Amino acid sequence: MFIETREKNHFATTARNTNLHFLKQIPKTHLEQQTKGKSACEDDSFQCGEKGICIPNYKDGSVRCKCDDGYGGKPCDAISCSQLFQDGHNSSGVFTINPDGGKAIQVLCDMKTDGGGWTVLQRRLDGSVDFYLGWESYKKGFGNLNSEFWLGNDYIHRLTVTDDVMLRVDLEDFDGNVTYAEYTTFKVADEADKYRLLIGGYGGTAGDSMIQHK
Image 1 (cartoon, one colour):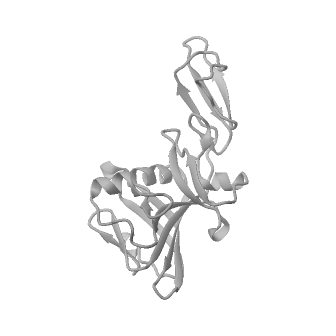
Image 2 (spheres, one colour):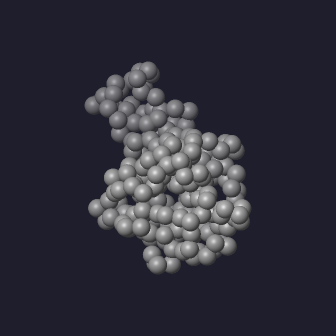
Image 3 (cartoon, one colour):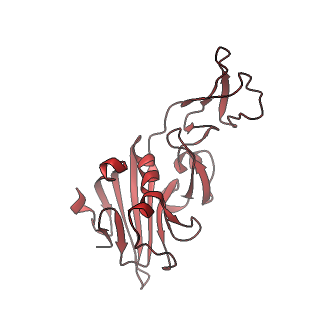
């Protein structure tokens, strides 16, 4: 078993390289977010970006963004790495996404693995980052998106709560043997529910190490 539960929501692995991804499968419809500001959308302090239209409310001075499908927030950021991939971004790297209209998130997008469009949740390569940390660290995330990191349980909850997603785990041992596991069902609850894991629909070559969580 390559990935194990340690304490409440810690993960440990005996593999050398471990990458956890998930793919947003069902794009959102238009997201309209109320924001305060001048009624004139020409105000430089308010921008919806290239993927949105600014709509003013002249009665109360508020404005909102009406975003294109697959975009949300202020400005209108892509809701997922999958959406960015569909829009032609085919190079992996760090991008800004907004899955639910809240605060935007910096994520690492993998545009190469298994068709591209994956958001990387965890990356372990060389042991340069300590993963034996406590609840608060796993809640907020730690590490560096350009090296080893855990994205953070709060962010993972936001990324999985609204739409159907897939989870993919890629493993490489010290002899260079590579295996993977995919799950067609993957959701993480919020902190009040102790980040309860819902997972199922296994396929792959690594074996189902998540069977104890079903």
